[in-house]
Image (cartoon, rainbow, N blue to C red; front, side, top):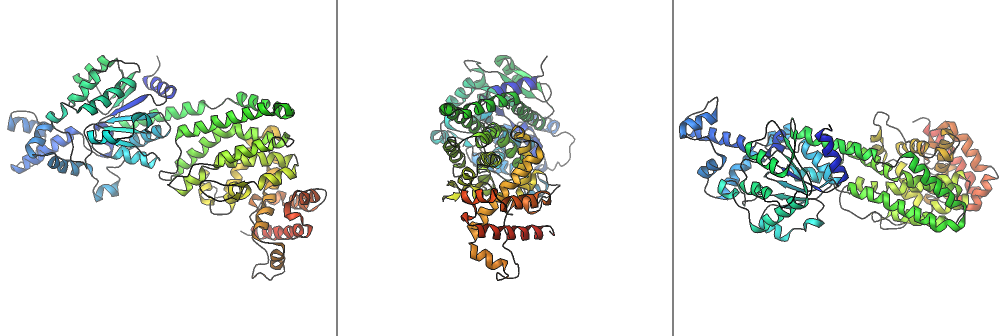
Length: 591
């Protein structure tokens, strides 16, 4: 029989956004946020202290003996406070982290909160119902780059984003601990307002339900809402530690829910989220499917009458890849972490590998009529929406454009289509981040290896601390992706470094004219007798340096480079660049 967790993961994966979560106080147990029963016992202890009693092995038994009834969360709050504002003050101390909590990491989002946030970010969950007062879930969501729509009262519902339009809709049934409109006592929990009931009814009717951390014992109005649900079009899963209470079992029978025995909320939600990641990885296009796609693109490239079919193929692949990224919800918001950086890189690459392989085929086998299509795709990928947030995440949104850009450039470099390559490298791009035209070679390629991004890209393999981690990663990626376009891995590496050298020409000439470079080489530029030039791996990888420099300066390649527009078509400038690059490489050997 299929394990219930596996069945749940499959159902959530295949029905993205269909399941709503119902979360109770058990979710925050690991964050040392007390449950209602924990608060009840502590309030009992505090009442006892006022009567001079300070040590009891069982506070519930003491309350029973002293008052003739078991302790009640609702009745204790009623007895100790007269208004909702007073009850809020009492609860504040149980939820708000103290200075010591901040030092020890207590009362912060747990593994369960972060796993839920990732599921929301990836589009698997959109609606969350919770009886919790704390803000741990909201904090975890914001760290993951998701700004939730939070409804904590009838007033909030009146002005909230419609449920269908919210990326994440959180219905806090009992309110927020920083809001005086809390629902705590039995009387307050017996009935919800009309608007809240309608919203709750709609959610329970239109969604499947995953319940965790909620006992079902105290929330009369919520039990009633679940019981009156008119249909059960999607399943209900109830995650429970131990045997569910009688009230919970009644609801399980009513909903036909499937019970999942769990150790705790952390292991349940992290396990579910990891299963979803596994399913996501296995859902990538099969290599044979990708090979068929590339074969189709090459057939279309072979005949100019198929250019419309090629455009349709490429356009549909762009839409598919962008949809995958949109479903993951990658934006500029959220805290930076090594894990999230590696996750985003892996996701981008998995989504855009087929398009990159089509791109190199277009560059390698095209004859010119494919250029406008490649240009339009590049403009589309580079126009990521402007978002407030971390600069690192904002820059990374152009990574798919960089993959497409480098692939086409490698293809044209391998085919020695130098005119097309020069035009491609110099395409003016305007992104929402830069807001000004920048040559594509600088924006999508050269900028990544000039030093500022080195620390970030080294996170892909922190043990190595490479000098050009972005370029090194791309070489490894291209060796895996583009084997059919080259003879072997060494050919990929050599072509990539040839591309680096050509980009180095463009970058250096953009910074300095011929007279300036000549003056520096003659020692008139200061202590250093060369102009520092970014030439990527070529600067330190001595295996290919001499071969590439000779290729750059000897005919017929040198003549073809100048005719294409490299080094401004000036032979003297090309020779100066050769001298300068050799000095850069010599200097690099000593680093």
